[in-house]
Image (tube, rainbow, N blue to C red; front, side):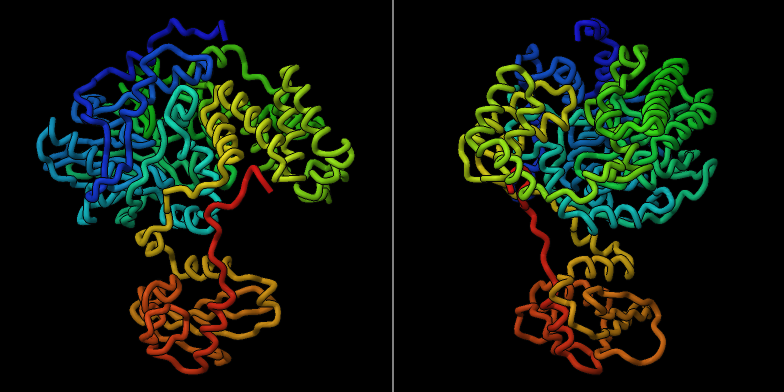
Length: 612
């Protein structure tokens, strides 16, 4: 730690460069007065680093907590510190083009208002989504009602909605840990997440793109602003793009190069990203744009100015992802497993001395394991790991072998005294899973998690540890973010909609059920069939022949309300939404709809993580 260049204040100078004004107070509320974002709560970061925080993470938090409107270059502005991401505004001939309108509509509206306070009441004349993560499109209805061009990379809609709906419940639960949403903002608690300070808790929206970017080199003009695009699929998101504003000599890097090591596999869960192509697209960005850019900015953090510094920044980011990828492959081909590789992996000293390569959001440890997972999966090849007991049964046997819970807790206490918090956590986790009501085990594990969290350089590790400690003390609490908003559900393709239904079927309950429903979506002139077969709900588009037990004729919106169970969605007039289907235009046996509804489960939003 002493070798890190804390005396180098370049990042602070860049983070403050171009400052125009801040939102005062730095609080965003709903129309009803509910707080959805509060950046002022991080005022404590102006002080010196306390013993409850890693000095490197404290420094990163100080940088990320800066809030306000900033001029990037002539005609390009950013609002930072009003959500997890930045909102960028590019002035055009008649208005302003918005890039990445934050997580929630309330924050996006506040950011646009701050810009207009200082640059005039310019209308929004276009929107660009850099990629398919919710912090880059969720606030769009805070800046437009959709009557402007909206540009996104090819595949945006499929990935934007599938990630947030298919596994959205589990991701949201884990995101509560990752972002420390319920932790106090304090030197002892949440210090941001390395990429920003956290996620807002407002209204998530989505307006579909009107223009897809389908190839690198594609050039578009939005309100007189020329934009040259580079597609980068499979990097930080499945659908993502960098782009150059040639007349401004400004390069947008989306989330492909930020001032930290990013995630190859985010701790909230996602599809594993490809570090190999990530590095290659950064090389391509240098080749395509370096000689035409005087400033590079991203959807998080602060810009980099000057051609040489841009090349250095992008090259170091590229080298980092390439090194982690290639060295993981080298070592796994020597027989090392993911955890073993993570333990021996060292970043080259020249990169370790650079602040923006540090793992404040991603980490070397979990990124290496993600690369291993991408190529070899969860199994390390050791037969002993092929059919292990699940956590509770495994824990009970371990604790029994050690002589009972008291013995395990006492042994863990010895490791705590010796400073081996990692193994103490392992022992105590077994103790808690073997007996979730043992107060001494829960108390000591919470203490261990607190120490591990407060010593972590990585913000998401800190948040996971500290949230785990809090839930050991107080139990799980539901999060406030809901990514399955009406806009998100409406954006599902018909196939995705039926897929989302299929993953809610209780398979064992449906083993002996056999029926078929034809769905005629009259407004789309689409026909779909769902067949319950051996516990699986099978979907067919444009089915041929007869064979359905029930045929329903309805609009897509009626289908959405029918499947949501809201109000009188079933159309039977009783307002219970129980799936009777009375009042629906149909042929066949309406009781089949009730049979289907009886097999569907609602996800559990606050399932246990640190306890059995």
